Length: 279
Image (cartoon, rainbow, N blue to C red; front, side, top):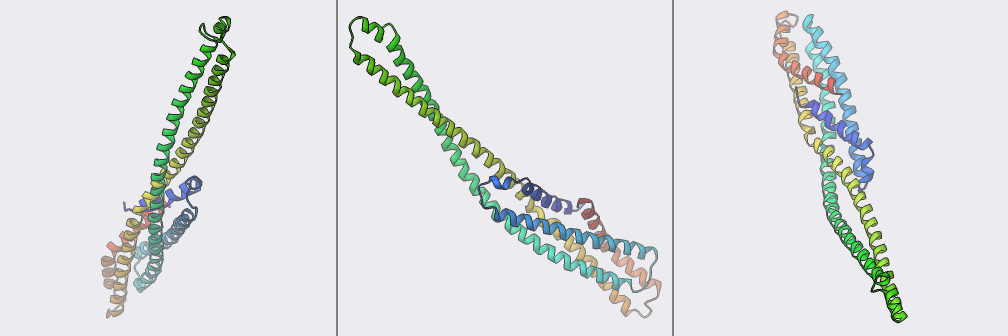
């Protein structure tokens, strides 16, 4: 099997990613995603056209081999000229896709690096807030024990301690309580930030994987272009030989054409079968 199925799969993979809507969670401009999706969709549409032409060509060739007639080499040459035009357009589309994919990949990589830094910063903030919260709780409990414990305000009051002790302890408790609330707010904020970053990273990682598959796009399409050009050359030569033959109606001339063109034509037909089974 050729690399064409892999090329088609890479187009479908990106389109599926785009249709999932995850690109809206990347924090990047949507324009590059839209452009790449348009290119992939166009490429699939062009492959559909090429598939249709090859199917028609395959039927004509098989019928010709079973019932050889004259002047068919030039007919096949015309069909393949159409295919050459279509594949050239497809290659141009695929080249644009490759360029757009590389540019978007660079943006995604930069965004991932930035988020990794932000993730570390918010993780540090979360850990510090947890420490601050624990310290504040301990300070509150310590102040509370002084207020109500055996050595606290109630005991001190009975032995004639002033109200100033009570006020000082209450201030310590209030300060510890405020510190605890502030730490909890910081914990909540950092947790939410880390959740948002994780969601964004997931969207970016999915995008990165989808784009990476497009790196193999050209291999299958170039093989298809070579297959079309090879069959076109063989049929073109057959048309020329038929035209220059002393007796173009001689079955031997037709059989020579079939023999010489068969390998290239069967290669193209095989590539067409791969397209047809993958679309």
